Length: 407
Image 1 (spheres, one colour):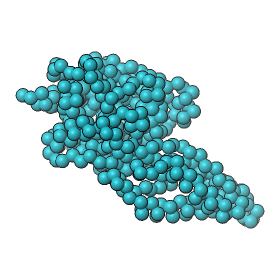
Image 2 (cartoon, rainbow, N blue to C red; image 1 turned 120 degrees about the vertical axis):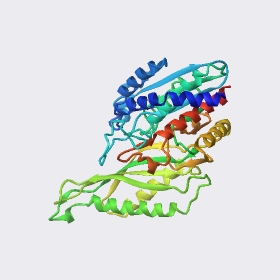
Image 3 (cartoon, rainbow, N blue to C red; image 1 turned 90 degrees about the horizontal axis):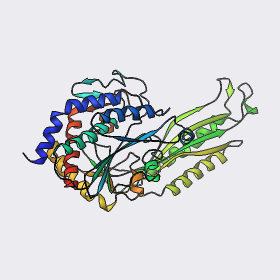
Image 4 (cartoon, rainbow, N blue to C red; image 1 turned 30 degrees about the vertical axis):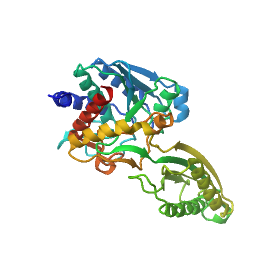
């Protein structure tokens, strides 16, 4: 048997254990918001201890977390040292959006049906807590000499942008890897992704009785004018094309709107939140300046209306760094063998906290157990699920890749 065969065989022999590990992770909720994620880190550390993996716990100061709009964050680092050489970080995030409505399966049950595991974060990205952990265990089972180190980075701030997750670990000087792989997709090797600007816009008018509307200023009508101006921009974005395969054009989404007090009252205040995805070629400062000007001009055309604009998030795009080539080539080689198809290297329209490693000059890629596609996995929708065979094979790909890079 080759070392690759031995890695595959070890993962196959321990796959039921890997699935049980993932089930335990799914069963501890990490809904963000509200973002009380420290209990999941504690449970993860406890489970890792059973494998002989000591997880260093790094709680983010409570004042910083609460100012950020969350309740608790404890990030984890597991360091496996094998000798002189490069340090490879494997990062996955445990925080996840709340389950929402429409579930048939228990969102925290980790139920298995038709070869799939169901539950919130089963596909994004508690699955890669499992794939990364068991890939490292498989690697160590060889007992072969290795040159370098592996770190598991399990963090809890991807949904809010990552600044208190990977960003915090890097800024505190707690880790400085040479290469990194982050939780991602079971087929594509992702080398670039979109940036994201999120803003909260409050439109102020003047409340009045609906029987005498002329005595007020309708904030909702003002908001409609501003939204129309934004949607007109959205149509223009389709004329801009990215050069990165897998990424098409910029776009804008208004995902939340609220306001008014009653049906018989002219609304005096309306608030909405927008999400502007930026392709890698765009300058985030220019994008924000333009959006603010578009909204200011639309508001100025509505007598009595004024607006407040608050930036909620600015996540820059992930740009590929030249040093990621060994990662890309190894993942593509082993992915093709194990999945039986060519594995493309490409961009994704999502944004992730992986960009923070790239901004720190650490070459990396996004690759992991799932989802194959966001749509297929039901990520951020009801009945999120992951194909167990994707979990198995992605674990084998990661283990083989680590063997190549550390031998």
